[in-house]
Length: 243
Image (cartoon, rainbow, N blue to C red; front, side):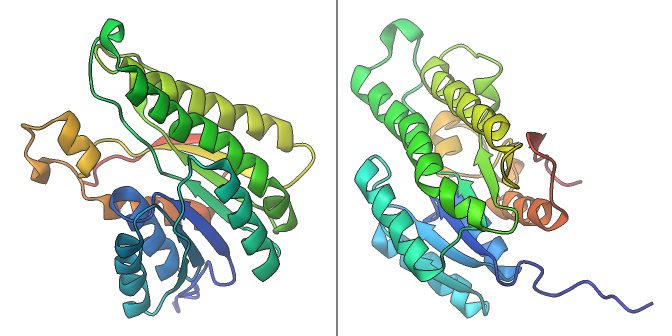
């Protein structure tokens, strides 16, 4: 039997990936580009973004870098305007950028770190949803994927600061999903990447052998596959280590 699966099933799709300069965000961007999407890469560090873009182009994918600080609400608005002017739509929004404060008892949470995490993990998420909602609605079935953590739903000692931001993150995405499901084709999925070999995990588990957890590419490929298969609104899943 001849395989009729298209080689580039996401061809023609415009995807925006935040936190795309490294780790899971970079892996998602590369996986989406490999499946045909044109990926807009956002993060603060230009050099790191250029490295990811080079990898995408070397693999015959296409991308555009958009260096910005997501904690600056005005920069998010400018990016939305630029994407609107160039493509007039956004098919896929992947919210991956996140900050993890130091692991500490709730009574010893450092205020500045907590505020920075709240700004990036929560306030920037709301700003992204607000800025890109019109462009997602112009697409033929806009899709939003938010990368969460199990500590948002299952509080853990010393993880209170990060867990609180992820609980708020999940709530924003779930609320938005319910608000748009009857007035548009936009759908939202919340994905827990599980234990993954990233710099953030290395800081949280400094004694862990990184080879005992899956590489970011596993998560990137899982996200691409999910978008290709498509999903119902308010879809949730955890990416497990492949056996």
